[in-house]
Length: 210
Ligand SMILES: [Zn+2]
Image (cartoon, rainbow, N blue to C red; front, side, top):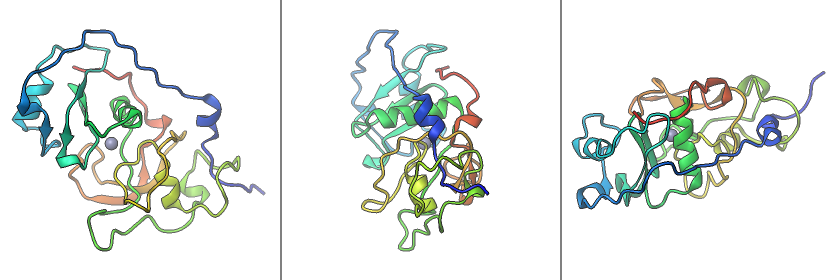
């Protein structure tokens, strides 16, 4: 009989470490229109596109744009094929999250709608079928809920203040069950409870800006 709890032991033992090395010059863009961005997932957002196209493609390197706010402060980062934008509230975890998107990973959420009165969290405890590639090892406590596990993932997006308080450290081996977008490539599509591509199994490429 196999007993135990889900773990991200591979993550812990492999000790994935992200190191950013600066390869180009720093540019200060003296344009106040590019300090605060809204409607950031609209691909025809002309202000955002103008900023992202303001420097040349670095190819197999990441262009990082540091701005004041995204969506009035509710988003810490965003990724497009042309570069990654980090808001002033974003930290190293926000950068790693966006760089992992560039590698092919997708978002996962603890709740369906964090703005709603009934946010509809991921129900129930963790089970083997919910973390098929990461079961065993016993790193997590046995009474952990699936919502709590999702909250710990580096690819977790959003969350509710006071409820989803875990630090987002974990990059699992495989997919994990939780709320994800029906079309993972479209951040405006509705959410569904399903396996989400949040682990090493969906990493497809080295990050870059084109
Ligand atoms: Zn994300």
